[in-house]
Structure formats: structure tokens, C-alpha cells
Length: 342
Ligand code: CP3
Image (cartoon, rainbow, N blue to C red; front, side, top):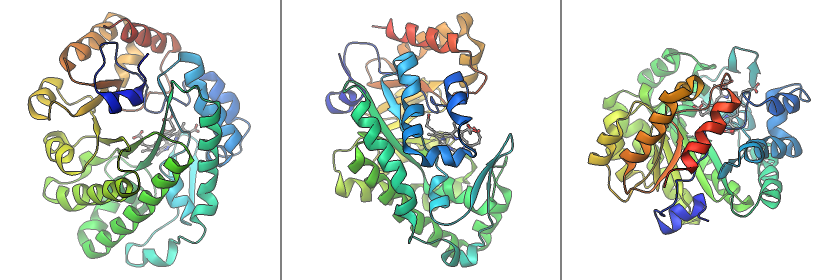
């Protein structure tokens, strides 16, 4: 049997691709709701190792996915740096204000590892109870995506306030990105030391970066981040998920140093095949709403992804996180079809 990790170590195997889903531990699972109820806030769940482990394992136990992704959130970083983060029901995340011209006075490294250590503890506990054939994935948000939440103070459609500040005070903004590169790389290094075998960098709002600033705001910071982590762990597989960057994927895949790229559903796989190095590992890219819809459309889309990927090593995944309204039976069906591919 080939594991997800084997794909990075040995390349494509003849069998079906390994499969996991972004946000696979979450609200579409009734057992997640039962654990979530035990905690007053979402961050309490992230910071309680025993519960984070339980939730991390749930999707692997129910569906036998090939990988577990540690249960946490990209916004644990600002929270552990001292910027207050809360998750208001149905409103998404809310962060206390962070003026760009004085971010150094609010963000502090002093208590970071004290708070983040519960994430590393959850990783140690998860690895020791996870079967060796299952890969444990760690993650963090990329500097650009994290900075947008931190400056906007919430998740919005266009992050207009954050982007305006970045344009108006670019020097300070670049300093914030540099600071985040440092923190994120250390957070990822600690996750690997605790037992994750692969990491994923979520650039969920890559599509909001103007093409003219792509190099400064996304490419260079990601390059620095990857090289800092690789300096400590040269062979660590790193998956980049630069959502919405379209044709910049070529530069991203060549210059950042990532080992694999996760594609969002807007990327035609024929474009990826023609433009991205044939040895690059790809991940993706089923539309999460096709999984909600189910039926023949779902089956056809799965087979079409497999066919388009051809001889390339790839990991079956969604183009973005699984949606809360996804029927469990559609997840089962999807895994059944993927496992029947040869
Ligand atoms: O993938 C997993 O199973 C691991 C857990 C995980 C969560 N968040 C748990 C979560 C991961 C990998 C994330 C990453 C994350 N968090 C991203 C990048 C991925 C993406 O979807 O683009 C982003 C942008 C965030 C920030 C975030 N966290 C938002 C915007 C929200 C609110 C919107 C929403 O989906 O609810 C969250 C909350 C959150 N993070 C939940 C979960 C399970 C739901 C909160 C709850 O249960 O009350």
C-alpha cells in the first residue's frame, strides 16, 4: 500500500491517488458538532490538545482518508501574537484592531510559543495514535493571506481596508510580511519537530493580490518562508495552495521551492499539464459544490480529474475547503470512486 507521503518520496505509483480534503474536520460531521459543543469558543477547541486530537482523527476514522490534517486554524498565529481573535457565530472571524504603522507595539513574540505549544502537543498525541500508513499534515496561512485578516480585522469579500493600507504604507506592510515570514516559519518548524510529515501553506486569498504586486507580496515572502523551513528540514514535502492566482501558478511553482501545488477549481487541468513541470506533484481540484451536489456529475468530474492528471503524481482533493452542507454519503461515494481508479 502506498501512503500519501510515499508520493513525495517515490513519485507516482500505479494505484489510485491518495485522497484527503481541505477542512475535512469540521461542521459537516455530526461528531465534530458534539465535540465543538463542549467548548465555549472555537479557539478553546483549537487550544485543548485532547479535543483537537479527537477532531483531527474523526474524518480519518469515519472515511479512512489517507491523511489527517491537524485541527487548528490559520488565525491561531495572530491570536498567539497578542492580537485578539474571536469567531462570532455565522459572522466568521473578528480580530482586534492592528494599525499598520505601529504593529510592532501590539504583536509580540514573548508569549507565542506558550500559546502555540498546545498545537504541538496535539500533533504529538495525534501522531502517536494515528496508524503509520496515514500521513499527518501540518499547516499555516501564508504571509499575504494572514496579513489581510490581521489588517482588515475580519473576513470580508474584498479585504478593501487591508489592501488600502498596504498600498498607502507599503514600507510598513513589507515589514509586517517579513515579521510574519519569521513567525510562520518557526511555527511550521515546531509542527514538524512535533511529528507532522507534510506541511501545507494556505494562500487562500492569493486572488486578491494585484498582478503588479504579486512578486513583492506573495512570491518573495513565500520563497523566504519555504527556504527558512527547508534550511532545517531539507526533505520536508511542502504543499502550496495559492488560491486564485491563475497564470502566476507557473512562477509560484518554479520559484517558491514548494514540492507540490494545490489547484483551485478554476484552473483547467489541461492548462496545468501544458504549463507546469511534469515532475511537479499536483493536488486538487474538485469543486466543493460538486461534492455537495453529488450524482453522476460528481462521478464524471472525479474520472475526468484522474484522466487529465495522466501520468503525473497527484493527490486527490477539493479545489477549496469542504462545505458544511456536504452530505456524508457524497463523501463516501467520492472516496469509493477515487479508490476504484487504477
Ligand atoms: O482542514 C482541517 O480539517 C483542519 C482545520 C482547519 C480549520 N481552519 C478549522 C476551522 C484548517 C486547515 C483551517 C484553515 C483556515 N482557517 C483557512 C485556510 C483554508 C481556507 O478555507 O481558505 C482560513 C482562511 C481560515 C480562517 C477561518 N477559520 C475562517 C474564515 C473561519 C470562519 C468561516 C468558516 O468556515 O466557518 C474559520 C473557522 C473554522 N476553522 C471552522 C473550522 C472547523 C468553523 C468554526 C466552528 O466550528 O465554529
